[in-house]
Length: 467
View 1 (cartoon, rainbow, N blue to C red):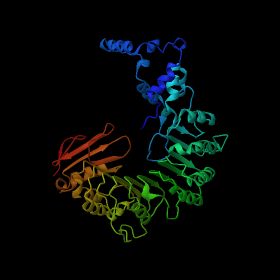
View 2 (view 1 turned 180 degrees about the vertical axis):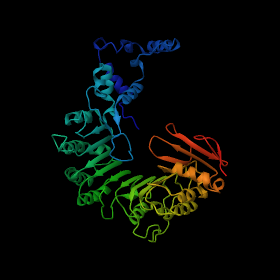
View 3 (view 1 turned 120 degrees about the horizontal axis):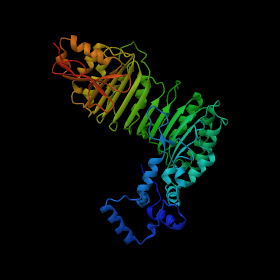
View 4 (view 1 turned 45 degrees about the horizontal axis):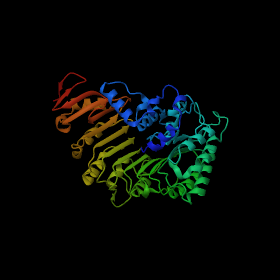
């Protein structure tokens, strides 16, 4: 992340205007000594392992310390958070505001380090909610740096001003040319204001720097369709998160071909999902979180015809939905895919044939693959999955489920050909209730349940030879 701090020379010029005799003790007047003498004294202190006073650190280092002092929090507007959006604690006792009261030296640096003031929030129903006057001050201190903004409609039961977010939006739009990212939760009132601003400023290309947009909408379909028709005006947009839980009749007119990151959490048919994915020619990461069951008989493949679609830039793909989202894979050629995750709710039997066809065609350099069947994976699916020959060279292969480790253990103990089907396997757990089987390098918060190799079970239970 670029640090839009004022240059070192400019900050030092501001600091040098201060009268050292009037500063608190935390600012030593030794900084006013001749440069040569200060360098010699600094070198002498280092040789003697003396502690260097914090105010003798380079200004850039002190700026980084100030950045680390700010309490930032991931606000869960999306299931896949793109970045830290906002400083939650808009509290005069917390950074960056408390930095202004330590001494004049710190105040001068904090006020001229614009990156401390660029993550702004318009949410009211939180402790220490930001006020409009506070946001105006932050906008002034941020100078010309790009802004990362968070807005959300307020619950009328928890706030005295239901239009607080609307007023914040009107304030933020005065710096529309500096918006870098926006996360916004929309109700009908806020959606209407946001649409009006896009209509007024979007056509004039005022949002020149907006690269990232998260929309969590709780408003009628008519407003959503109007909003979608305006998103293509954001020519610099590269990362989009879209969440709307009600069905929106297709098509979703979003600028698919200019996006590098796509995260869609709204109900879609397999046909529509295929159509939208095929337009994501520049995307490196694609997630569709709610692919609905095909209208055909359960377990039958998709019957619509389509040419094989090549997405050569795609590196990460996540598909989640009811039925058989893995059935979309044979329609694609993804030669550079490195990460694949499939989450199927009540999937049909023999679903992994489509995965095997896809891996055979794409021959992609996968580094990680995870499959998850909810609520329970079938024994035959476990066997079918681990028999796919193209899984062997992948460093991390995971099958997730609540009881999958127990099911696999039963298969290993009872299946006559287990040694041939499963040459090597691990079973492990983590912080959640889910368990995993497959192979990978376990992380810090993962624990081994048991391992299987050369017909023997080890760890988690006494060594057992599998017949």
